[in-house]
Amino acid sequence: MKRATWYFDFVSPFAYLHNLSLVEFEEQLLIYRKPLLFAGLLKHWGTKGPAELLSKRIFTYRHIQWYANRLDIPFQFPERHPFNPIPLLRLCIVKGCSKDAVDSIFRCVWEEGLVGDDPDNWHTFCDAVGLNASEANELISTPEVKAELKSNGENAIEQGIFGVPTLVVDGNLFWGNDSMGFVRDYLANPKLFENPTMKRLETLPD
Image (cartoon, rainbow, N blue to C red):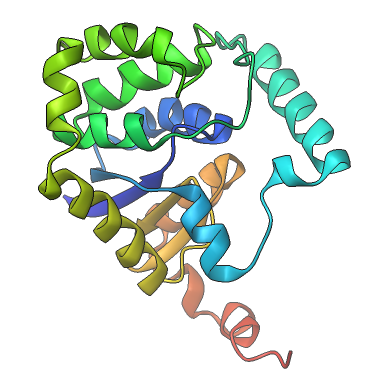
Protein backbone atom coordinates (compact mmCIF):
# COMPACT_ATOMS: atom_id res chain seq x y z
CA MET A 1 0.00 0.00 0.00
CA LYS A 2 1.26 3.47 -0.92
CA ARG A 3 2.21 5.75 1.98
CA ALA A 4 1.02 9.33 2.35
CA THR A 5 1.41 12.09 4.92
CA TRP A 6 -1.38 14.43 5.88
CA TYR A 7 -0.49 17.79 7.45
CA PHE A 8 -3.22 19.69 9.28
CA ASP A 9 -4.12 22.13 12.03
CA PHE A 10 -7.29 21.94 14.11
CA VAL A 11 -7.80 25.68 13.62
CA SER A 12 -8.63 25.05 9.95
CA PRO A 13 -12.27 24.28 9.10
CA PHE A 14 -11.15 23.02 5.70
CA ALA A 15 -8.90 20.52 7.44
CA TYR A 16 -11.96 19.28 9.34
CA LEU A 17 -13.78 18.59 6.07
CA HIS A 18 -10.67 17.16 4.45
CA ASN A 19 -10.26 14.77 7.35
CA LEU A 20 -13.74 13.39 6.73
CA SER A 21 -12.94 12.93 3.04
CA LEU A 22 -9.76 10.92 3.63
CA VAL A 23 -11.87 7.85 4.36
CA GLU A 24 -12.22 7.46 0.60
CA PHE A 25 -8.54 6.55 0.28
CA GLU A 26 -8.21 4.11 3.18
CA GLU A 27 -7.80 1.11 0.85
CA GLN A 28 -5.21 2.88 -1.32
CA LEU A 29 -3.15 4.93 1.10
CA LEU A 30 -1.55 4.35 4.47
CA ILE A 31 -1.96 7.86 5.83
CA TYR A 32 0.31 9.28 8.53
CA ARG A 33 -1.37 12.22 10.26
CA LYS A 34 0.96 15.08 11.19
CA PRO A 35 -0.40 18.04 13.20
CA LEU A 36 1.45 21.30 12.74
CA LEU A 37 1.04 24.96 13.56
CA PHE A 38 -0.50 26.71 10.53
CA ALA A 39 0.70 30.07 11.84
CA GLY A 40 4.27 28.75 11.61
CA LEU A 41 3.85 28.12 7.89
CA LEU A 42 2.43 31.60 7.36
CA LYS A 43 5.35 33.16 9.23
CA HIS A 44 7.93 31.18 7.30
CA TRP A 45 6.52 32.00 3.86
CA GLY A 46 5.61 35.58 4.75
CA THR A 47 1.93 35.18 3.93
CA LYS A 48 -1.32 36.03 5.71
CA GLY A 49 -4.05 33.66 6.79
CA PRO A 50 -7.65 34.05 5.60
CA ALA A 51 -8.70 35.52 8.94
CA GLU A 52 -6.18 38.36 8.65
CA LEU A 53 -7.89 40.01 5.66
CA LEU A 54 -11.43 41.16 6.43
CA SER A 55 -12.98 40.51 3.02
CA LYS A 56 -11.23 37.14 2.73
CA ARG A 57 -12.24 36.25 6.27
CA ILE A 58 -15.94 36.87 5.57
CA PHE A 59 -15.81 35.00 2.27
CA THR A 60 -13.95 32.05 3.79
CA TYR A 61 -16.33 31.71 6.73
CA ARG A 62 -19.37 31.95 4.47
CA HIS A 63 -17.88 29.50 1.99
CA ILE A 64 -17.10 26.83 4.55
CA GLN A 65 -20.52 27.15 6.19
CA TRP A 66 -22.23 26.93 2.79
CA TYR A 67 -20.10 23.95 1.78
CA ALA A 68 -20.84 22.01 4.96
CA ASN A 69 -24.56 22.79 4.72
CA ARG A 70 -24.63 21.74 1.09
CA LEU A 71 -23.10 18.36 1.93
CA ASP A 72 -25.20 18.01 5.09
CA ILE A 73 -22.07 17.75 7.23
CA PRO A 74 -22.43 18.64 10.93
CA PHE A 75 -20.72 22.00 11.31
CA GLN A 76 -20.72 24.78 13.89
CA PHE A 77 -18.28 27.67 13.90
CA PRO A 78 -16.64 28.30 17.30
CA GLU A 79 -17.64 31.56 19.00
CA ARG A 80 -14.09 32.86 18.53
CA HIS A 81 -11.79 32.19 15.59
CA PRO A 82 -8.92 31.89 15.00
CA PHE A 83 -7.69 30.53 18.31
CA ASN A 84 -4.37 29.20 19.58
CA PRO A 85 -4.41 25.49 18.57
CA ILE A 86 -1.12 24.48 20.20
CA PRO A 87 -2.67 22.64 23.20
CA LEU A 88 -4.87 20.60 20.83
CA LEU A 89 -1.99 19.84 18.48
CA ARG A 90 0.11 18.59 21.38
CA LEU A 91 -2.83 16.62 22.76
CA CYS A 92 -3.11 14.89 19.41
CA ILE A 93 0.58 13.99 19.51
CA VAL A 94 0.21 12.59 23.03
CA LYS A 95 -2.40 10.21 21.62
CA GLY A 96 -0.09 9.10 18.84
CA CYS A 97 -1.87 11.14 16.15
CA SER A 98 -4.28 8.26 15.76
CA LYS A 99 -7.27 8.60 13.48
CA ASP A 100 -9.58 8.32 16.50
CA ALA A 101 -7.82 11.16 18.33
CA VAL A 102 -7.79 13.39 15.26
CA ASP A 103 -11.47 12.71 14.58
CA SER A 104 -12.43 13.35 18.20
CA ILE A 105 -10.64 16.68 18.47
CA PHE A 106 -11.99 17.89 15.14
CA ARG A 107 -15.54 16.99 16.24
CA CYS A 108 -15.16 19.03 19.43
CA VAL A 109 -14.06 22.11 17.50
CA TRP A 110 -16.13 21.95 14.32
CA GLU A 111 -19.22 19.98 15.27
CA GLU A 112 -19.68 21.17 18.84
CA GLY A 113 -18.23 24.61 18.12
CA LEU A 114 -15.77 24.62 21.03
CA VAL A 115 -13.03 27.25 21.03
CA GLY A 116 -9.75 25.35 21.05
CA ASP A 117 -7.88 27.45 23.62
CA ASP A 118 -10.71 28.19 26.05
CA PRO A 119 -9.73 26.68 29.44
CA ASP A 120 -13.38 25.88 30.12
CA ASN A 121 -13.33 23.46 27.18
CA TRP A 122 -10.13 21.63 28.06
CA HIS A 123 -11.87 18.87 30.04
CA THR A 124 -14.12 18.15 27.07
CA PHE A 125 -11.19 17.82 24.68
CA CYS A 126 -9.32 15.57 27.09
CA ASP A 127 -12.36 13.38 27.72
CA ALA A 128 -12.83 13.05 23.96
CA VAL A 129 -9.41 11.41 23.60
CA GLY A 130 -9.63 9.37 26.79
CA LEU A 131 -7.44 11.40 29.15
CA ASN A 132 -8.12 13.32 32.32
CA ALA A 133 -7.22 16.98 32.21
CA SER A 134 -4.45 16.95 34.81
CA GLU A 135 -2.73 14.00 33.15
CA ALA A 136 -3.04 15.67 29.76
CA ASN A 137 -1.55 18.92 31.06
CA GLU A 138 1.58 17.07 32.14
CA LEU A 139 1.88 15.08 28.93
CA ILE A 140 1.51 17.99 26.51
CA SER A 141 4.24 19.86 28.36
CA THR A 142 6.95 17.24 27.87
CA PRO A 143 9.98 18.16 25.74
CA GLU A 144 9.33 15.17 23.49
CA VAL A 145 5.83 16.32 22.54
CA LYS A 146 6.95 19.90 21.98
CA ALA A 147 9.83 18.69 19.83
CA GLU A 148 7.59 16.52 17.69
CA LEU A 149 5.23 19.37 16.93
CA LYS A 150 8.16 21.60 16.00
CA SER A 151 9.66 18.84 13.85
CA ASN A 152 6.38 18.36 11.99
CA GLY A 153 6.40 22.01 11.00
CA GLU A 154 10.05 21.93 9.94
CA ASN A 155 9.55 18.80 7.87
CA ALA A 156 6.52 20.34 6.19
CA ILE A 157 8.46 23.47 5.25
CA GLU A 158 11.31 21.37 3.85
CA GLN A 159 8.77 19.76 1.52
CA GLY A 160 7.48 23.15 0.41
CA ILE A 161 4.16 22.90 2.22
CA PHE A 162 2.56 26.33 2.47
CA GLY A 163 -0.90 25.66 3.88
CA VAL A 164 -3.27 23.22 5.51
CA PRO A 165 -4.66 20.75 4.87
CA THR A 166 -2.03 19.21 2.61
CA LEU A 167 -1.77 15.57 1.60
CA VAL A 168 1.65 14.46 0.39
CA VAL A 169 1.75 11.47 -1.97
CA ASP A 170 5.01 10.42 -3.65
CA GLY A 171 6.42 13.83 -2.78
CA ASN A 172 3.59 15.61 -4.55
CA LEU A 173 1.55 18.19 -2.63
CA PHE A 174 -2.24 18.19 -2.75
CA TRP A 175 -3.43 21.28 -0.90
CA GLY A 176 -6.92 22.08 0.25
CA ASN A 177 -10.23 20.36 0.59
CA ASP A 178 -11.01 20.94 -3.09
CA SER A 179 -8.02 18.86 -4.24
CA MET A 180 -9.72 15.51 -3.60
CA GLY A 181 -10.50 14.94 -7.27
CA PHE A 182 -6.88 15.79 -8.06
CA VAL A 183 -5.69 13.10 -5.62
CA ARG A 184 -8.16 10.63 -7.07
CA ASP A 185 -6.88 11.16 -10.61
CA TYR A 186 -3.25 10.97 -9.52
CA LEU A 187 -3.78 7.64 -7.77
CA ALA A 188 -5.46 6.31 -10.90
CA ASN A 189 -2.62 7.64 -13.05
CA PRO A 190 0.69 8.07 -11.15
CA LYS A 191 2.28 9.47 -14.34
CA LEU A 192 -0.17 12.37 -14.37
CA PHE A 193 2.58 14.97 -13.88
CA GLU A 194 4.94 13.48 -16.47
CA ASN A 195 3.10 14.54 -19.61
CA PRO A 196 4.51 17.56 -21.53
CA THR A 197 1.71 19.90 -20.51
CA MET A 198 2.27 19.26 -16.84
CA LYS A 199 6.07 19.32 -17.10
CA ARG A 200 5.91 22.72 -18.82
CA LEU A 201 4.24 24.19 -15.73
CA GLU A 202 7.36 23.48 -13.69
CA THR A 203 9.54 25.71 -15.86
CA LEU A 204 7.39 28.76 -16.56
CA PRO A 205 9.26 32.02 -15.79
CA ASP A 206 8.29 34.10 -12.75
